[in-house]
Image (cartoon, rainbow, N blue to C red; front, side, top):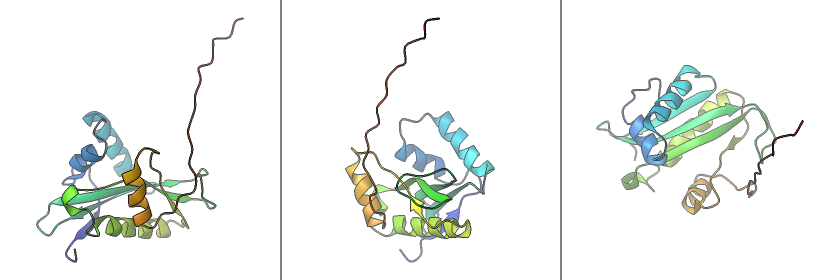
Length: 155
């Protein structure tokens, strides 16, 4: 896709962003999407969103990245750019859209002094893991989180 256009998003009303987010995270309520979108726009030094557009203006995909100062599993530097989400429409997958989005993320990260780009995928998300590998990521660890309730303390 030589005529693909990648743009940094600077407005919550950017064409296609909300719809693409809903496709990636369908269980998230619309109001929560709007809240998170606004937070990213309001803090452009910590967050960036890149949208991929076809020549006719149709949104084909997006990538959201954040700057993390705290330690990120599997990394050795700080700050670390963290790919919070990436999504490409079904029809445009395997045509280089995701790679072009990650390239834009890498430029953004380098300009902020990052030496590493991290991300994650759930253990059950084998497609997401394959996509990360195809985009040049290497797996750093596997983990299962546990929790337990703490009983109230008796005085």
